[in-house]
Length: 197
Length: 197
Image (cartoon, rainbow over the protein chains, first blue to last red):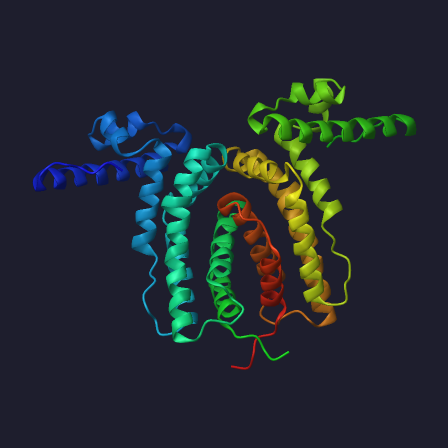
């Protein structure tokens, strides 16, 4: 995204406008659904001009992508909890909490559907959201490897595929979100060392 | 779908027409992409009338749903291999082979995207494809439970969520399909009994 060359006060105002646009896009989608959202409508609700939105984002989906990425960064903790099992548990709990926020599931579904239709958006969604979420979880796996409680056969990439695969499959396919039983079972499955063979 | 009331020869002809329509829809999607496919184009290519297609399917997506469900049933084995680990391995290998068939990944992506936009199709996709694929894998888990080599903490539902979650996440999000290393790691992860704690 373009750097804002304005002085300090201008940068602050510009940042407030950015946040107002992200909030407006999210609220509008919650009210009228992704198909009903327009960049014009988002700009109007944020009290900004259409060109201001296009200055920072290519499409309405890109605005929502950034709104969701920020929500996820703020909601899902990757803090050191002393053990891989505790951190997988916290990551899954926070992810379940994020999915329970009104509007998050429909927005995720709209963005993943959009990524299947629009190849350019697909790459921006991968870079700006999917890879960013993977990186968050992979810090948890890397810490476990350093600490020595990561199961030997589990690579960071496969662990991330299984965790995000489960979350996305639930969101897109089954409409069942993560419950207490799921969190416990996945936490145990990913963190337990296999028995002797 | 409507029962065909015609006598034996009529039923045979009608079944040939159904298969021709399924093949035509699949080939056409491979050539022009989901967005470019029309029921009219499918009918024309199959040498059938548009009304014949609509007699059996509500939309072009429903034709592709059935074509994919048949391909999956024919490609992915759930035969008894003597152990849960061997059967998970076979299921993943066959699934990887299915995903390697030209056109399968783009069609799966189009159908999942369509399911996010059209709620009615979403339910038909769940019933006619997603639940049907889960049921296939769940027979493998049920056999393991009867045989006694299913890991204690692993429910059939969670095992299916993890396997199909991984497959769908790869198809929709990362564009990396299942490789030898993935199959080995998932087979071990799902089939190994946890060590003593």
